[in-house]
Image (cartoon, rainbow, N blue to C red):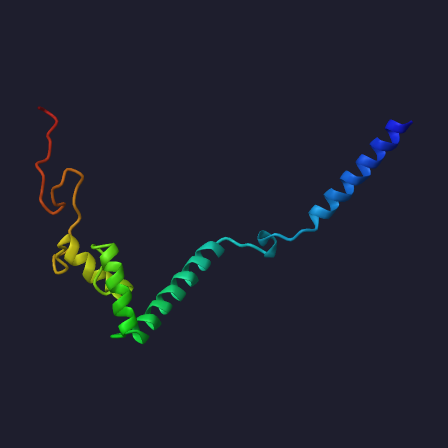
Length: 125
């Protein structure tokens, strides 16, 4: 009889805990739709770019920024001269010696230009 009372109490307590856990709201309960992750990523990137713009505008030529960059350059010699205010496109062009005026031509897997005609195979070889 004692085992039945303990078993009944255990089942009642388990059901109470399960019903309490089902009422917890999670971030996915807010009506998640396809594309929400993309939207969140886009808005986060937009805020980051705006914060970078505000920072670079407000600290242009400041002594505090120059001091911080000096310390960073001491610790990380390859760090860009302007820090986070470096123009990324210019830095990539300089680092990888990219010719931005070169025409965009698709390249085949063998490394040749796709505009270069290849000799057609006759199949009788």
